[in-house]
Length: 216
Image (cartoon, rainbow, N blue to C red; front, side):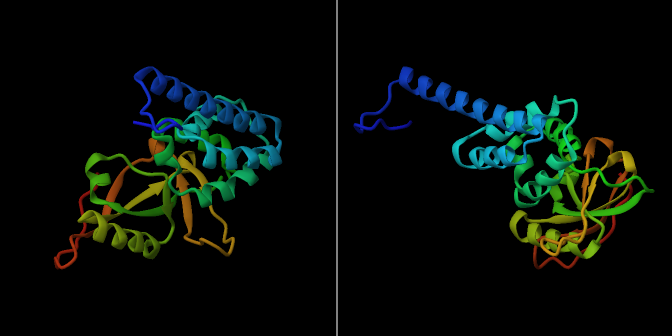
């Protein structure tokens, strides 16, 4: 429980008041972000991003919910949001609601793919495959996906390299080679992704088996 300035534990009523104040702050900053996006004000958007990071608890969740309801944002806002996405790899976890995240990314990312399907890969925990709740960040390069899978194999006790063919309706962004964080990233709307298979399994370190899986 939070401690008051005089070191006296907060009462239940004081605690509820503090939580309500935090929530109001979160909503205030989230609205500022959404209003900046709607107005095409890049500088104000960056200020709101800083405030979301430094002064809020659930601000990003509220901000993405508000942005998802906008009719449109400018190309300047989309271009400005791209480095925000690149530098906030845990953003989907902060938002905590995949449909909201997908709708917001469809609004905020600079859609730049109108061609044919792209062969994509994702290295992740084996649990993601079991739950069929796939993430947003994939790669056009299996070596990049394998590197992420190796990381998760050590931390999560087993990992997979997922494989899919993403059609244009599912592709939210194809990253260009910016010269930093170049991972061949393809941002996907997982709700529009078709069949996903397991290209490779990376079991617990020390286990010799690695193989392929049937389509799923």
